[in-house]
View 1 (spheres, rainbow, N blue to C red):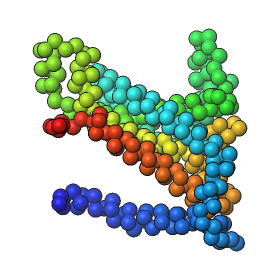
View 2 (view 1 turned 60 degrees about the vertical axis):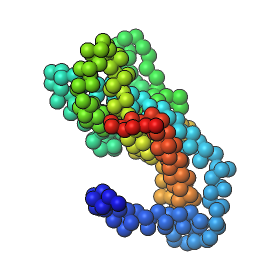
View 3 (view 1 turned 180 degrees about the vertical axis):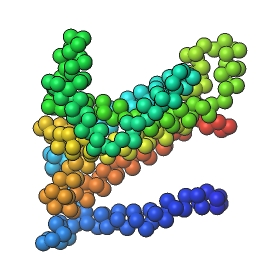
Length: 289
């Protein structure tokens, strides 16, 4: 048994057992009740869960959240990797560029939402004004049921600085002698990327993928601050629906059921990624049969 490993993660374990585990169990218990915590506390078993499957708003929120997650995650992973590759070339002002690309990932979500709300204004927003300069009529963005979620995906990709930083760490951990040997053998830059860089980065890609999936399915701030779920529920995410049901309509049992379904979806996707990692994640020094 690796005692040192358990000692290192013990603060997280203690925090989880004392603060998170109890709240999660309480949430599951509440999902079995019809309650507003003030006047009603009626045990109804699994009816909150069965009610979800006949609720059109739940299915709408599920499709909206899936659209965002499956659109934003791959784009953000690729975009942040490209930026990391560019910023790993020893260019001038490299440190400045790294800070500039990393800052969006640490700025307050509310501040970012307000900023993008102004940037995406159809008439006087900077993005549409920039498109107009090259003769392109910009879309209505947040006021369009077609373009609202692509706008959210654009925001998510823009804030991919955290992924970029991890990619940079992964790139700098690749032994340079691998590139030297490949160059001697006649491999060009493209071959070196596909045969050395990408395989050696798969552990970082793996970690970024899991973290991005978890974060994407929990999207809330943008839809709450910018559009309030509109237009026509085109940005109604699962967490926003949970918030409405629990903290606006006081259907806490139903809100807890939504939370547990969301947890199950994220857990399922995470398990699929973990199981698939054996086929595509490579660790230096690993010997496979």
